[in-house]
Image (tube, rainbow, N blue to C red; front, side, top):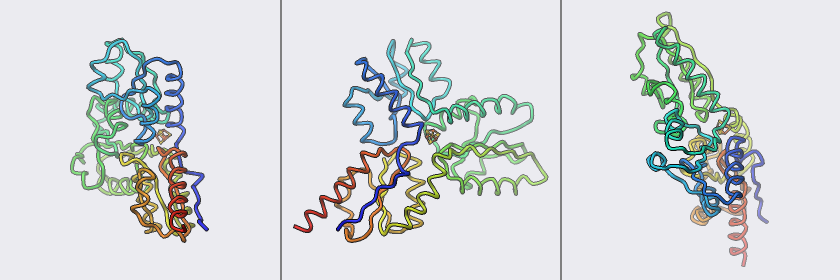
Length: 292
Ligand code: SF4
């Protein structure tokens, strides 16, 4: 008898839910809808919406587009995107997550006062990530992005520092960075920081901890490009070494899991429920084939 459970606390965050429902709403009108970048870091969900008619484009293609309707995903965009849209007469369906928009506005305000008080804007985040591009864009590309403490040599410690975080970075990593910078600036320069990590992600850490402890095997379902998926999967693995990352149900057979064990299926904030259900169904199918 198979013992499989899908984590009820896994799945899309509200930012992604909002972006996808906006896309579905627009596609239902039967007009052409472009999406700037993958709507979510999940290949199968992108494929589902593509079949409904959505066309995903990159920033180069966006710059060439005129008189069309373009959806901006939850990660947010830099000011240059809005400028291009205006010049090219593009209609934007802005599905930027409100949490990201609030962070963009805080960074923009902070940057505007930064030159007066000799302050550097530092953002803890992943280089090249879409959200980071949107955040750095608020500072005329001046913000310093650091992915981890080994990159602290990019920061000038003779100047003041104001630190923010990409919404999907790890809370532990951020706190650690704050302690290190506090030590390095002690009694010398001013150091301010804002914990801008989204609790839709951070709260999943305690949930995943419990879930990983309750199961013998954890199957973590996430797109390979999901930053939040990586953070959560690595955490699950640190709690339960029998944790495996898969991007779809076809990767299950290759894991050769012991199907007599208690198996928990969970995912990232970019993992749809239907995908975790497909993984569960695949496990049931494998078990049925095995007992034949
Ligand atoms: S993880 Fe948080 S900030 Fe990012 S899209 Fe979801 S709700 Fe918004």
